[in-house]
Length: 400
Length: 140
Ligand SMILES: [Zn+2]
Image (cartoon, rainbow over all chains, first blue to last red; front, side):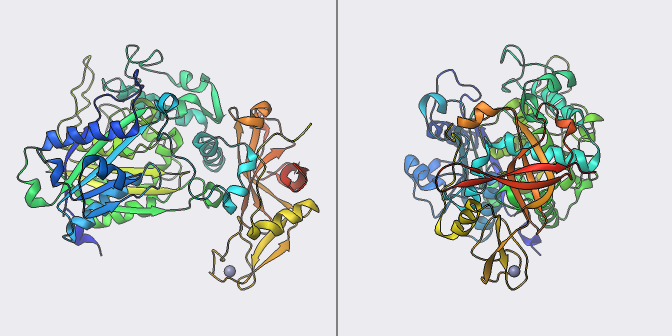
């Protein structure tokens, strides 16, 4: 049993880089990291010099060197977009074990700017370029995540009799959330020429990227920097910010290469969420909102099933029936998601930041008379999915 | 015209597979302890963890597990869009990725999961023949 870890650490702050999205003036990944770290230090009042554990999905020693710190715990776990949920899990264990007091989890990725200035954009393939798995897949013209995930939607529709239109509701409702978030890339016509509300027809008539996925079934590729700080309860209670408690955490994987994905309609989020629920002493019925990785519409829908929040084959209904929407029973992806808010290649940090804002009551208010982006939820399940529906990290977070 | 798409580079461990393709054979790794075939080639059986592995000649037949139609691609493949990629359930067990032939990429609704498929090989250069799969009989 892992229940003794529950609530042994809190997220005490979460901040983003000064500018995120499609940056007019390109920035490097390290600059996006540093802007966010500076901001979260200011937000919490925790000096950067007090950070004694560093966690990032890259070369954490280089990041620590930029900051001029000498941490006691250095973690570079990089297994795709869910790495950051796993970092919370690892940081919590290190805090519980008494190794560190203050953990920094940091993210900087210039998925958009890299076209101009180079650097760390969307993750490259793992491991050796000439691995056996690579030899057996590289000949067949796949070109990144959309070209893989599309196979999962085809299989899902075959097994459950669903259609691409069913999944289009995920994109439409997530866009509705983005219209409430002024920092969302697709917030409005002011933020992007294709921004603002969309219809199911818009989603289905968009250019096909990898059938059955049209462009609007796919996440954005933007710039983002984000940072969160975790600490032990005694310190968390002494700060000016509200703590958000890590009630449960779990991680798992089904495979690394999609070639080894046993069931294209399921992910390891079933296992990682089971571990997180067990640690928390809570279950799906206790969750008041959900933040799940929507690399593609199909990812989010399958994930909700794996988290026990929808029956198998019916995940999309949460969006189609309005439960997930602003004002709905179970708000999902309240920031506008990777689909319409921001997605830099790895999206796990964006999930953590929105979870902290929602549960600490600091999410922006609604605009234009629509229901507020601040949901008032006191519990949230957060699930990141990395690779090709490969790795997952799940957190159960609760308000103070 | 010369083959203008990515060509895999064999490593010592996978050489029996690539040697096989030159002779029109689909060689598969099988565990001599549990008798299960796995794909891609490993140094250890992923099912029972025996390291006593052998290469067998596969039937080159299987069924279509799932597919997608690629409308965006790079290099030589960009000239071929749209094309169908697919995962094949081998009759011997486990699964392969391929570009699927004998189907209409412009009409994905006509492609049937479960269809019987058969392997064929295309010569890419002097050393490498690449396996592709073709639908030979529509499934249920
Ligand atoms: Zn075996």
